[in-house]
Image (cartoon, rainbow, N blue to C red; front, side):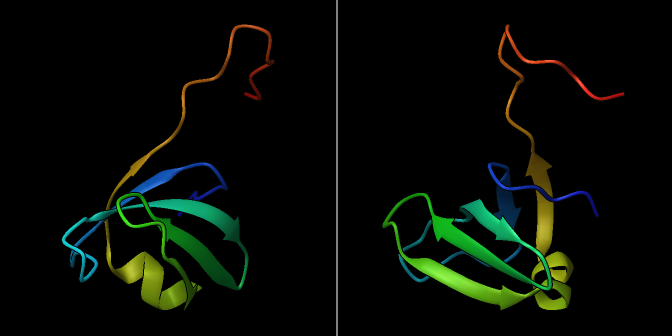
Length: 69
């Protein structure tokens, strides 16, 4: 899966606060994600996080940035 810092993840199970979207802060062997509602940060193993992703939203590139193809 192509998950990068800055992406928004919609997860299968929501956070206890009720929000189901998370912002990716760090991607590697572990993911560090932040709940977009309450701001709580969570560290998850890559395998567990990827298994629970329903949808990935990549941020739109800004006008001055080059796109890698």
